[in-house]
Image (cartoon, rainbow, N blue to C red; front, top):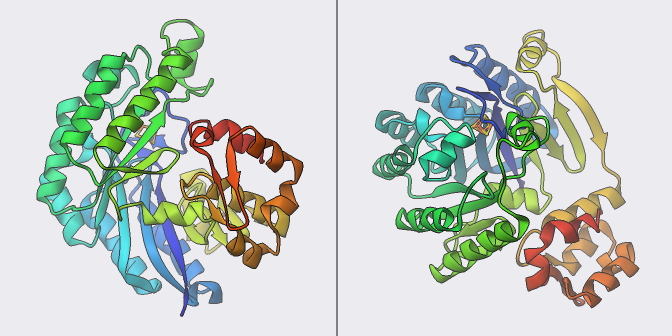
Length: 379
Ligand code: SF4
């Protein structure tokens, strides 16, 4: 049986830059016409590796940026091109990130017909005032409409991204956002806290006192309220920030959390080939030029040693509710969490933040709520 892996494609262009955005994305009216050809050029380089030829690819994720800034035929041609280069599982999860302001019924129909079977819509909030404050281009009505159009186009696997901790966000607004999201019945919800970086326009507005974030206690309560509402509605809280209907976890992201292997195509994308990490150059123009010249587009290459790979696997795996199986760690790295972490592990267990026995290690209920702080101690 060939081993399974994933493919990630990065489209680093957006119509404008959201005020909190510190991601690798460039604002532009029209995305560069030559970029998709560069993606396929890198795909051809990677497809020649014996490593790729031994793999079956179970997931493909087109993220950004805003992939839907390109017309649907560009995206479906990319998908078809990758299908010729790599062995894609016939049951592969093929996801696409989209922002509501770029979606139309026809674009969604073409994407669905062209093979995309999962869509992740960046809603963030249904409140126009909050969306405007963080520089999003859509409003709440457009977000609801985008979901309805995606359903009509045949997307039966749909994620909504929501954010809490927005400047000036009230408890009432957050409750209404969760209620609206639940009415739309997504298969998956990603619930993130806004964490503004200092060098973004939002970070500067906060530093200057022009905007104010909710108090940390309120943010923690908002997260807790969302959790209770989603669990009551039958969602599973399967990862620190992610909820799903049974059987609808994001398979592509599960591969990351299991520290599996994946190919990363596009400016700033990262590949991980059994512990060999390749980071592509971040600037899209340079990425295109390198590939047009027949060169490899990497800015960094690093072979992770066994301890580093073990540590990453534990930290990523603990983000999952189910945690990690000790026998699988032992098989993969010839190491156990107790051998590697020793006293730190004992301390976290004594503090009630981790649960561990001979079979499994996982965050406790309390540890799950404080995941970021706990995981920092294992880095
Ligand atoms: S849509 Fe996403 S990637 Fe694009 S600017 Fe906004 S936050 Fe950044």
